[in-house]
Image (cartoon, rainbow, N blue to C red; front, top):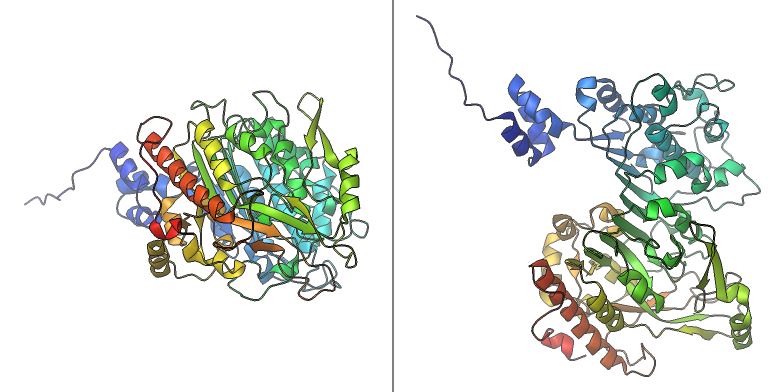
Length: 598
C-alpha cells in the first residue's frame, strides 16, 4: 500500500512575502526552518536588517560573504557603543567594518556611538596600554564614519589620511585588512572593485548617526587629522552629495565628558561647560552643503540640551540664498528635538520648507521638547551692546551660496563669539528680549504650511525632571496618568532612538511622549564663573502662571491664552487637511478649561 503524504496548500510566494514583510524578524527566522519553500519566502524579511556589533561580528561577516543572503540586506546598524567595554578597542568590530562594502543593495545605514566619554587614561600609549586616551573615542568615532563612507562610495588607495588616522587610533597593527602600513592594502575600496568589474557603488538613501560629538582638546597638541572637520574629507563630500541620499537623522551628544548625566532623572544640576558644549553644533551646518540640502526629503536633528540660540545653529546658513532652490526646497518631513526658536526670520524660513516638493510644502512636522526664548542675559555692559550694533563683523554674517555669491545674514540678537562667561565683575544685564511667541509662529505657519498633514509637539517626564516644570501645566492630565502607566524607563528620550523613530507613533507612545497643550518658554541666564552653582544649566523654563512678561507689551496670561488657542487651532487645521479637507480649520477652538484659566 502506497502512503500518500499530506501537503499543506501553498500560498503564492508573492503573498507569503507580503505576510512575512509584516511579521517580526524572529517569526520570519523561525519560518525559514519549516521548509525550503518557507525558507525562500522568509529569507528577505529575516535579513532585511542586520547589525554589526561586538562581540557578534562573525555573523555580520558571514552574511556579507554569502551571496545568497547579502542581496536581501537593505538596512545595517553599526553599533559602536561597545567601545568602552574593550581594552583598548573592539578590534573585531573594526576588522568587520569593511565588510560593509559587500552589501550593494544597502539603502539605510545607522551608526551608533557612545553619548559621552569618561576621562580615559591620558597617559595610555598606543599598542602598549590596556587603557585608552580620552581623545581616542573621538578618533574612533571619526574612523568608523570615514571607513563606512569609503565602503559606500570608495576612494583612492593612495589616500594616506585614512591609514594615518588608523595609526593614531593605536590599533593599526591589528587591522589585517590593511596589511603593511608602509604600503597599505586598500583593495577593499569600492573604486578598486569597480575597476575589477565587481560590486557597484552603494546607493544609500538614508543615513542615521546617534551621538555625534567633536574632540574638544587643543588642536595644537594632537594630530591635525584628529581635528580635520569631516566635511573636509573628500570621501565625506561625495557620500553626502549622493543623489539617492534623501534622509538624514542625527542625534548630537555633548562634547564634554563631565556632562554624562545631562539627560538623566537627577534633580541636582550637573556640570555645564560653555567651552565644550557647542563645538560640534557650530560645525554641523557645514555638513549640509547645497547638494545634500537640495536632495533631502527627511531631516531630524536632536540634541542633548536646548540648542539653536545658544549653542547657535542658524538654519539660514544651510544652502543660503533667496531663490526657490535655497534652504531645504524638497523637504517633506522635519523632526527637531529641544530646538530653541528665537528670531522673526524663523517664521518664513520654516514656512518655506519643501516649497518645490510634489505637495508644495512640508507634510510632517515634529517639535519635541522645543522652546521659544523670551530673554537672554549675559555679562556684557550696555555700552558694549551698543558697540555691537555698530560692529558689522558681529551684526552681519557673510556666507557663500552655491554659485559663490556673497549672502549676508543678520546676527543681531545672538550672543557674540567673544563673550566670556568668566567676566564676573561685569554688569549682568538683559542682552536680548525676543518678540517671538508661539502663537505668532503657529498662526503664520497655519496660513503658509498648506501641505502639512501631521503635526506633533511632544514632551516627556524626563524634561520635567531636569527643568523643574510642572508637567500637568503643559499637557492634559489624563495624558500624564496614561504615560505613567506605559513608560517604565527612567531614561530620558535622548537615550533612545527618538532621532530615528520620531515619526513612529508606536515608538512615541512606548517612550512616554505626550502631546502638549501649552508650549514652553525659556530664559537663557548662565551664571558667571565663581558664583554659586555657576556650572548649572543656563536654561530656565518660565512657569505657567508666572507674572513675568514673555513678549514685550503683552501680559503673560494673554500670551499663554493666545498660545493655547493657536496651538489647538493649528492642530485642528492639520487634522482636517489630513482627512482631505481644506487648508484651514473649521469650528471654534476650545482648550481644556483648566488650561484656559491661566
